[in-house]
Length: 425
Image: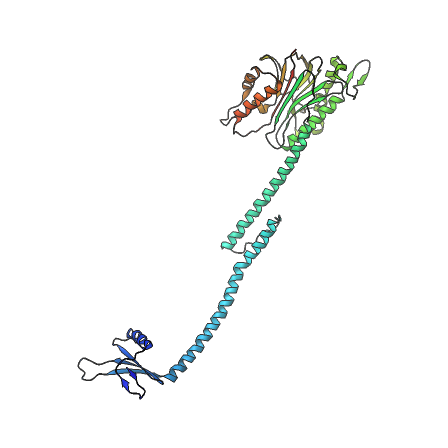
């Protein structure tokens, strides 16, 4: 229904998409169908209320004039606009508040992480909540603690590497080249630093000092004492005093050629006094640390092949010739440094042409396999009794067999070997 220009009501529905849409929507709220009528100054809804027995058609009119409707819409629009503006402002402040609450801890974490990336590990992220941000800060702090520990470990490793380099300087960087003699060595520390050491050095009288030793304990402490033992043996051996007549005479510090070596055994025996001097020095000055070393010290006359030695609690050395074990140089006294004024007995042997002297530390015989089996002396002796051409070949064969035996098992002790062979005639 609609009003025409003369305000006459027509029954035909108005052809308006808006009217049709409104009509469809209104039908949802009224039992009987309704029609919309409109004019320039009025909007009206006519609902058909005609009964079944009515002779005429009756409509219920709901109308509102355009001005009232427009005024109502304006008032509603003002309130809607005001509510919208207030909501927008509140949303802006609430958004800023929550954004700052979330972003501020992240910004702090970012600043601290930048300092950490530069190497400054003195800062920790504040944990101000128990949510995901707080958990992130907690995990970040754990990471910083881990980096601190890692940095400490790296510093220790750096210091140990420096100690390793210094310790290697105490080992002879060049073995004396003696006519008709071959000297070979093998040194594999279990860690960065070692308590084992060997030494081969020329003495002022032309004799040769041979040392292989194992300081008790492991780590930095044993490495420091290794350097002390090595230095004391050298110093006391080079400054040895022996009797050649009515009074004591110092051996000249000027090196002499092999041809001028004295044939007197007193030279060698006097040099062996370095073991007793070293023992007294360690026991008297450092007895509280209870540091000692098993030590073999021999003085070899290259021209005669006579070897005078003291074995202070060390593993027996083997003298081998043509696959046969000729002799075992067993301990002649206790370990060095246990207590002062210990008497160390000296022994003397003759190394004949073809004889091979082999010394080692207990890191060889006590090495363990992945199955926790011990290498043992018997296994070592079986290798020494096989035909071998040189001292170098002997140590190479032992080393290859030993490390194949150890395989992937962790090494708990240093491996040190020394071999001296007199050339065959």
